[in-house]
Image (cartoon, rainbow, N blue to C red):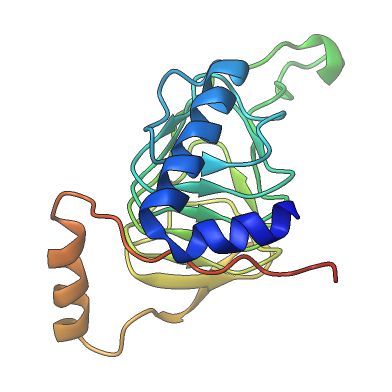
Length: 193
């Protein structure tokens, strides 16, 4: 029954957006996300730091772990079980076990506009992932990723550019430079009958 109602609402864009915004307003309040834009969406925020800055039309998938000092730009998508972690313990104090060495100051992690992070990827704290980049499922990102590149592997390395030429990249760059606008969301992946 609920699935049928969701399907009907999805076909009525305005109704779907109202329901989505309403449910997220409750979730933002429940999890203390004061810096998440009203159009930000996630149905699982249990392991997300309260200081997350989430811009327009960004999405966090199920089971994601997001440490403090993270900012995700407009149109960013995080697949399920993405980890944004690191800088957890000091390891450079001779004679002191790591468990007792404390933590260094957290560095800011930034995912610029229109970034897609695949399922199960790990982003180490302190990196910047450039506009329009894609991180493959299962990748481990240990250093900054330039704009419009696709990275994969452990550690993540460049596979290729996202666009074939500078003209395509410029068209996309002009779109990303504008105020974020709503579009038609992808249908959710059906994982159960």
